[in-house]
Length: 89
Image (tube, rainbow, N blue to C red; front, side, top):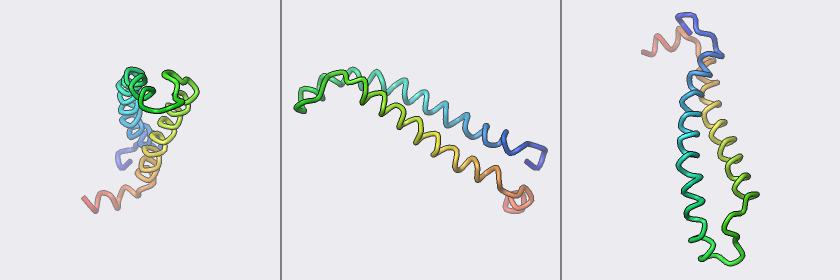
């Protein structure tokens, strides 16, 4: 921000990393959940192997929580006074 970055670009810079990790995690987690679904269904009574409602709700919840977990610190970073940050360093 000292060199002219706008707060929106600082937020986007931080959120880019968060979204990359989110996509990678979902790319590994969704196939793993599908593959292990039969094992879980065999262990628990009344659980379907593929319940799309629960799966979609979990994916949406993960996206919301991960986005908030990245956005809150990114917003704080965009509000920091650049002079104070430079003095700290």
